[in-house]
Image (tube, rainbow, N blue to C red; front, side):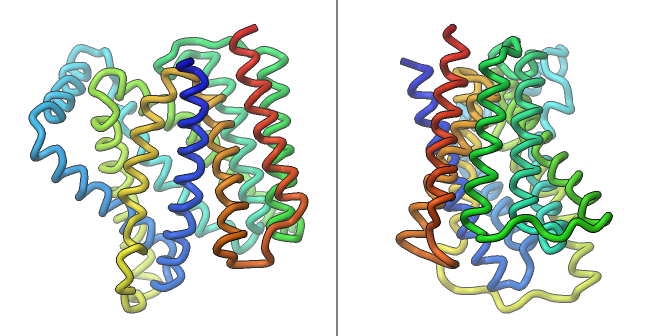
Length: 310
C-alpha cells in the first residue's frame, strides 16, 4: 500500500513541477529573464521556510538533528547541497535551449536522470538502501525515455535543433543536469531521514537560492536590468509550490526509490502538461504523440513497480 501511495505522490510531484514551470515561465517572460524568475521562486520559498521554522520549535529541532548528524559523520556536508542541482538545471536551461531546442534539452535531461537513478539506487545513496539493476528496471528506464521523446516531439511539433558541433556538445550540459536531479533526490532523502522532510527542503532552498543569486548577479552585470515586475500574485507562487513537491519527494523517495520516483514524476508532469495544454493552451495544443508518450510513461512506471516486487 505504501508503494502505491508513493507512486501517487510521485505523480503529484510531477504535476506540481509542470504547474510551477508554467508559472515561472510566464514570470520569466514578463521579467525578460528566466534565471531571475527562478531566483524569485527559490528565494520566496526560502523566505516562507524561514518564517515557518522561526515559529516551530519542532522543526528547529530537526535542523539540530541534521547538525548533530554532520558532527557524528552520519551525514556528510555535501549531502546538504542538493539545491545546487536545481540552480544548475535552471542555468543550463537558459544556456542551452535556444541552441539545441526544447526537445533535445528535455530528452537529454530525462536520459541523464533515469540512467543516474539506476546507479544511485544500485549504490544505495538514497535512504531506501541498495536496489539491484534488473532487466525490468532497465527496460522501464528505456521505455520512459522513449515516452518522453514522443511526448516532447509531439508538443513541439519538431525534432531537435540543428546538429552542429556546438549543439551536440551543449547536449552534455542537460545530460549532466539530469544526472544531478537523481543525485539531488537521493541526498535530500538522506537528510530528510535524519531531520525530517522540511529540514531537507530548507537546505535545498538555501543552497539553490545562494547559487542562483550568484548566477543572476552575473547575468545582470552582462545584460542590464529587468523589466518591470508584474503585479499578479499568482506569478509568485512558484516558491510555495516548490516547497510542497521538494518536501514530498524527500518523504516518497524512502518508499519507492530514486528510479520509481523519477518515472512517476515524469508521468505526472507529462499528464499535467497535456491537461494544461487543453485548459490553458500556450502553443499548438495537444498532439497524438504527446498523449501516446504520456500513456507510455505510465506503462514504464508499472514495469518499474513490478521489478521491485518480483
